Amino acid sequence: MGQDRLLATYLVETPHSLEHAAEVIANEQSTGTFTSVPGETDLLKERFRAKVVSIKELEQVNEPSLPGVKRPINHDGIYRRGEIVVSFPVDNFGPSIPNLLSAVAGNLFELQDVSGLRLMDLDLPEIFSTKYSGPKFGIEGTRRLVGVKDRPIFGTIVKPSIGLPLESLHGLVTEMALAGLDFIKDDELNANPPYAPLEKKIEVVMDAINRASDKTGRKLMYAFNITGDIDELERNHELVVKAGGTCAMVSINSIGISGLAYLNSFSEVPIHAHRNQWGMLTRYSMLGMEFTAYQKLCRLAGADQLHVNGLNSKFYESNASVVRSIKACTTPIFGGYRSLPVVSSGQWAGMALDTYKAAESVDVMHLAGGGILGHPNGPAAGFESMRLGWEAAVQGRSIEDYSAKFEVLRKAIEEFS
Image 1 (tube, rainbow, N blue to C red):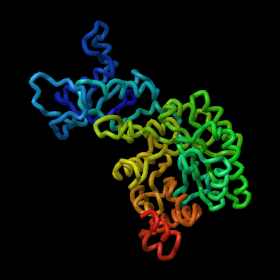
Image 2 (tube, rainbow, N blue to C red; image 1 turned 90 degrees about the vertical axis):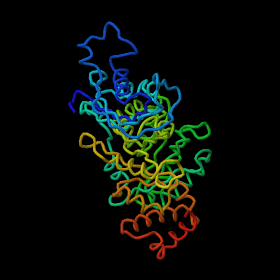
Image 3 (spheres, helix red, strand yellow; image 1 turned 135 degrees about the vertical axis):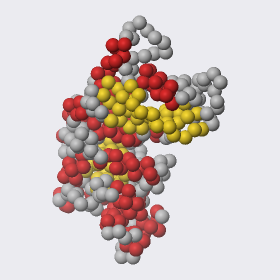
Image 4 (cartoon, rainbow, N blue to C red; image 1 turned 120 degrees about the horizontal axis):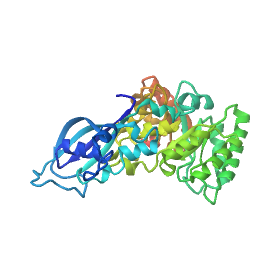
């Protein structure tokens, strides 16, 4: 692909021919509309029109996936599915993620000519690297700050998700920091609520972290949820940095990818990027966006750590999809831009072996809320069970076999399996 064009890959379902649907997509998202207009000259179309690159036929179905479809006259009752690749001139939007999204997504999902549409992937030209510098810390920078090299970074989430008094939060952070845990994050529900203002929360948490660090010599990384309106991000970030914090968390879909890029423009600590609300963009297989495309934009915008769900989690996502997501985050863009995959949701020590096999690497952050905090012997034992679970996985041993030597593993199996 030339550096003056971008490729977008779509999964399309249509009552028309795939060729018709492809041309409608290319036309609608570039120079055309529903009818010819005087200004749409051949010269203009040659420079600015999107072009169909390839069409790959897939299966056929007898019912439309989406409502509101306009069928052709004498429709044969067949809805055709296929993979369509469209090339967009970069001149149409420049190195701009917001305007890129208007081009490759925009009004496409509303077209009557398609009964299913999903953005599967984006092949980005290098001009985007001149505008978006990507993660400042990524995998290596996060490892450096937490002091962990040859194993996953282990962490937990503050539970209860919302409502925990600050004095109780101080005790929880103290206990986990003294136990040697690497990382704790705020829940996405808990950012700057009236009962626990962010400024006060930072003060309480950093006091616990610093007191524990004086004893252990290690400083736990805490991802403070600084999600808010755009004009609040810089202030919230400064509160974290001035207090000596080492990570800021935002909900990407709350602040937008542009908000993420804005935060990255001044951030002095790793950005923990949470993808909550992602399900409404992706859960239905014939609508929305594949994580393969989404994560590239998040990484461009500066996500140092990016949520990917977890294997055998409490959510709908298949294990195969989670595996693709883990590997996508560490696949280089423009030779770099790697983000640390954050594996979470319904996790405990017993998931270490499957996660290690899926990632084929220890370059993951493995978070367990209940799987650590709910351990019958307490949170410290929960953390130790996670460490031992991964130790067994790297050695190619089952957790059941390894648990013969370690009570905390046996207790974890009894509680969570």
